[in-house]
Length: 136
Image (cartoon, rainbow, N blue to C red; front, side, top):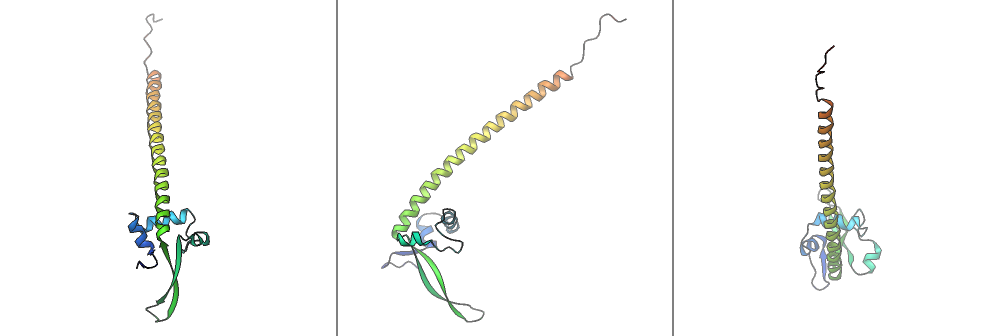
């Protein structure tokens, strides 16, 4: 549903252009408080020209009642801006992933050391005492 004369893209199209999934894109935009729970961009981002809201007619099939719905669209500049946001987010995620991996390795090392100490301690408790060479 892109409109070449107005340079608007639906969220699905934007996700495709950004080589990510629609749900991933929506989650990122909600987490960063760019979209509200209804996927409507906050005024700040609309005023910056990153997003727009198109009102569209929608007919409810079961009743035939027609109503208006708000559809969020992304501008060309919004696509570039979201791409930067995705890149920053990917760098943050990569850093978090490296930290998690280091923590996991440290945890495994600590666990191995604790198990080694348990073996040492259990062996010292169960070492048989030498027989008394001078029985009375």
